[in-house]
Image 1 (cartoon, helix red, strand yellow):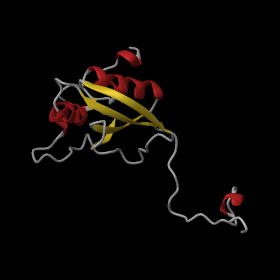
Image 2 (cartoon, one colour):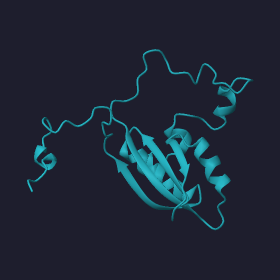
Image 3 (cartoon, rainbow, N blue to C red):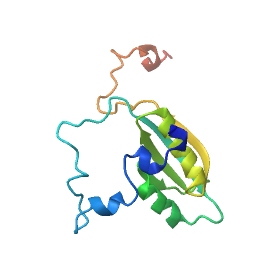
Length: 144
């Protein structure tokens, strides 16, 4: 089946109703949900930040419930701006990521205002040293 026709269960390697089977009686993940020993994340993940606006007939609770069951949804935030929420999506391939964005429009009932692809993270741990930076000229204060 084409990735463009995949359901969220197929993208996440889940079957409908699998959530009920995998959760223990106390709501904790069952053994099938725990990562296998030595199983690593793929080396390259494709991610996007998607700004969405709720439609007139789509309440916020519908979006939240949809995102809880969407395997590509990593995080989401309510925003006080011209958009209602920002959703972070992550997938193994660009095709699956595009499908997840399209599903937000179709299945969650929201208007996707803009989608930004995340290229790479910024390293904020080490302070920039002007003497070793490639663009050292930008750090030089002009003489008065």
